[in-house]
Image 1 (tube, rainbow, N blue to C red):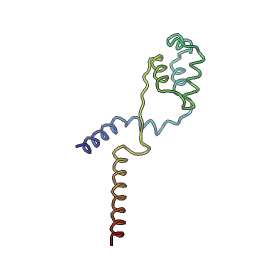
Image 2 (image 1 turned 90 degrees about the vertical axis):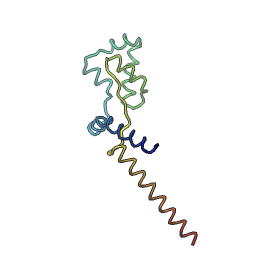
Image 3 (image 1 turned 180 degrees about the vertical axis):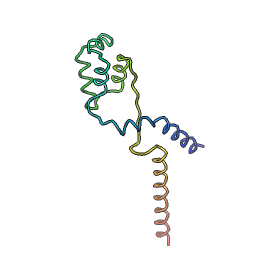
Image 4 (image 1 turned 120 degrees about the vertical axis):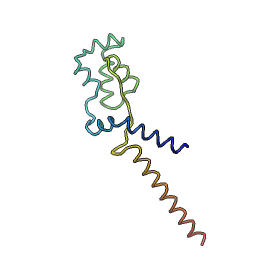
Length: 125
């Protein structure tokens, strides 16, 4: 039952992550999303400082932290909401689906087990 449940969850996650996998292929991390989206929407820093009740330096610091991949998800979420946006977050396998990765792991596990059994047979003779 547990194995079937995990397989179902993997298929569901693979379907939900399809868009994320596509985005991961095309997006190279450089300038952060915060600054790009803020500027694309024409939102001045002062507007965010009023909404969030923080100093403008905090906005710039967050944008820099995002570029360096040192920002918290909480801070990203707060700034996204202040821009009337939504933070969307996922962990996406590189170049494969979760189903493919799980199948490879299962295959590797079977191979290791078969090798170990073969070694044990050689020892017992």
